[in-house]
Length: 176
Length: 176
Image: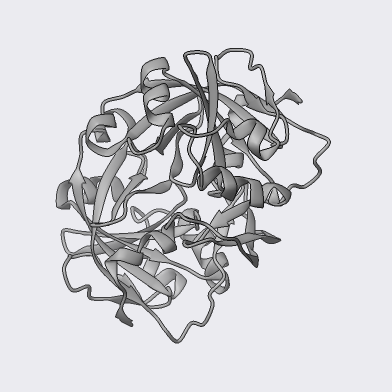
C-alpha cells in the first residue's frame, strides 16, 4: 500500500461506498460494515459517521478514539455483508471471514489488507455521540493499494440489495 | 408524485447519491447540489448534511430551518452540475436550468418536479452548524415519482467525474 494524499480523501468517501471500520480495544481488533458516513471538510479531511451503540465497535471507538475506515471493492461484497451480519462479541471476524489485519502507522486499529483504500482516523469531536451516535473523525493518514486498478465500490440500497459502480460520466464542474 | 413511506427513506440516501437541496427565503426559492450527506436514524428518518456558509443556501437554511432534498436520476446529471456551478446570488437557477419548483406540503421550499424522489425536511439540531456546517434534518414527508422506473443515481468522485449506478447485487443481509 502506498501513501495517498489527504487532500484527495474526499474522492474516496464522497461517492458513498459501503466501507469497513476497524477498531482495537483491550488487545482485540474488530471490524464492522458501515454505510452511514459523509465528508465534512476537505483539508484536514474530516468525516462524520454513525456507529450505533448497538454495535460492538461502539465502545471501542468511544474509549480509544481511533478507527480505520477501509474501502472494499466489489470482490469483497460478500465478505462485507458477512462482517455486517455478525458481531465481534461472538467471533474474531478477521479470521472468520479471511480478512488480513495490517498494523496502521498512526492509530491502534489495523488496516484491512484486502481493501483498496485505508484511512487512519482519530475522533475529533464526540459532542453528538450521546444523542445521535455521530462521531466526527479526522483522517490522519491514508493508504491506497495501487495494484487494484479502477476498483468498483458498492452502495447499499437496503435489505441486502447493493448497486455496483457503473460507467463514469465526465462533466465540467467547477467544484472540487 | 406519490407518498413514499418515511421508514424507507434510508434506501434513497444510504447509497450516497448526488442530491439537490432547495430552500426558500424572503419569497425566493433556490437550489444547490450536494454530496455530503448521510443517514443518522431510520425512524423518524434523520439525515445529516453539510451546507457550507459559502453557499447562498446556508443563510436560508439556517434562518428558516427548512429544506427539500430532491434526488435526481442520471438524465439530470448535467443540470445538477450546472446547479452546482452557479449561485442563487446571481440567478434564478430553477428557470435558468429548466427545473420546475412544485409546492411542498409541510415546508416552504419547493419540491423539484424532475427528481424521482423529494424529501421535505426540517432542521432538528443546529448544534454543529457553527463549527462544521453540519445540519441534522428530520424528513417529515417523502414523495416518489413512480413514473421513473428503476432510476439510476449519480455519485461524485471529484472534479466533475461521476459514477452512474451499475448492476445490482443481492446478498443475504440481516441488516435493514
